[in-house]
Length: 361
Image: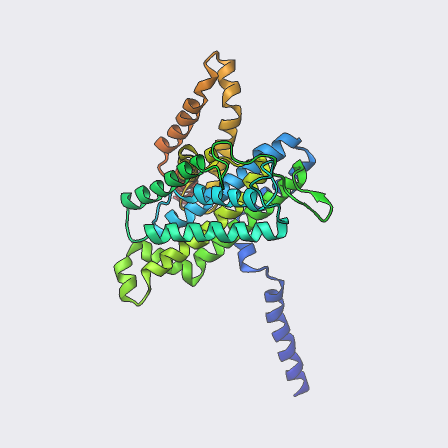
C-alpha cells in the first residue's frame, strides 16, 4: 500500500513539474522581436546622443501616445476623433496657467504635484464633454464636430489674452526636479516618456481585451444589436472618450515640458491633422501602429529640411516631402505600415507552405 502511495505521489509530481516550469501565457505568446525592441529601447541612451534621445525618441513617444488615443477610439470604437491633439493642448495650457512660466502675471505658480493632477482632470473632462457631443453622430459628422471643437479651441486661445496669453502663449515651462533628477535633461526625459508610452500601450492592450473593450468593439460592429443585448451604447462611447482623453492629456503635459512652451499653434489645425495622419500611417488595428507612424513622422519632420537643401530645393517645401512620404505608404497599404508587415508575413508563410507541399510531393 505504501509503494502504491509512493508511485502515485511521484506520478503527480511528474505531472505538475512541467506546469511549474512553464512561463506565463502572455510571455510565451509574445513575439521575440518584441523583447529585442524592449532591450534596444532600454539601453538606447548608452549609445545615442542627447539630440536623438530628447528630440527624436522623446517626441516620438509623445506623439505616439496622442495618436494612440485616436487609434483606441477609431480602431476599437469606430469613432474618428480630431480632438485628441486639442485635449493634449488643453493639458499643456493648464500646466502653464496653474504652474510656473515666464508670464508671471497669469501663471499661478502652484507646485507641480498639484498642477499635474489638476491639468489631467481638466483636460480629461474637456475630452469627455467633447465626446458627449460627438457620440450621437457617426461617420463624417463625428469628424466635423470634433474638428469644429478643435478649431474653436485654437481661435479661443489665440484671441484670449487674460487666461491663455493670446498668440504668444507661455514660455519657460520646465519639468520639475523630483528625487534630485532634472527631468528636462535628455536621458531622464527619454526614460520618462518611454515609461508613459509603455504604460499607455499596456493599458490600451489590456482594456481592448477586457469586457469594456470587447463591448466597445461590439458596439463598433453592430450598435443596434449591442443595445438590444442591454448595453448602454452612448455611455460606453463617452467612457471611451474619457479614457482616450486621459492618455492624450498625459502626452500633452510631456509635450509642454519638452518644448518648454505652449501656444495656440501647438494644438492648431495642422497639428490636429498630423495626429490623424500619424495614426493612419502607422495603422489603426493595433496599439503599436501609432508609435510606428510617429517615428516615421518625426524622422521626416526633423530631416526633411536637410534633404531638400542637399538636392537643391526650397527648404520651405519640407511639408511637401512629408506629404509624399505618407502618401506613398498609404497608397501601397491602406492599413499603414502594419498592413505592409502583415502582407509580407502572409507571403512568406504562403511560400513556406508551397515549398513544403512541393517537397512532400
